[in-house]
Length: 225
Image 1 (cartoon, rainbow, N blue to C red):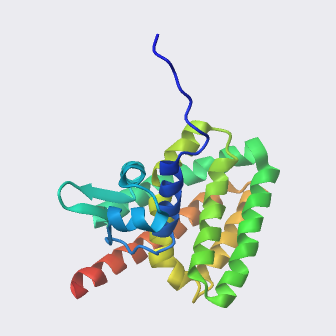
Image 2 (cartoon, rainbow, N blue to C red):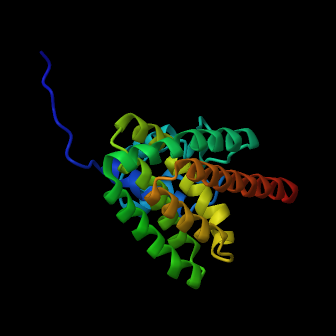
């Protein structure tokens, strides 16, 4: 039998990947922007090998597109991508909420409440990055506390793309208006009372409206380009 070696808890490539993921989600790299392996390697003080591995992991998460002989780029969604992503979320999030309510109601409420508490000063400061982080934490709480790892892993397939789109496209609007903030508070209230028909209706509206913002932003970008 071949020798089996355990990887260290967090490899260099994993650390590079996590930092790049954060940079993409928080808009340090714009949607569609080129990411130079050489620049990243120099910035981290590492060789290009862990950077390539990190890029491969980010490509698997849908955050990076690698074009052979051309380079690596932050993803740019199409209208079809946005429709599919919203449909996916609308199918999963209400079900995750019902499971979270049954599995760990108190834990889910605590996490969602903390996210909303972080949103309020972000709106006041018009800090779209902080708002985006809190927004992501609110939605991820449904999956963290649902008690079904397959459902949670399914959401992880798209969570990075959702977070990046949120920070880059919807959060700048959300911190100028209180619509999103008010919807999150209402969603928490409906969740806490177990009113899942109303929760699903509002969540569907909430996600659909985000998709409309994404689509408008894409159209503007195409016209500018």
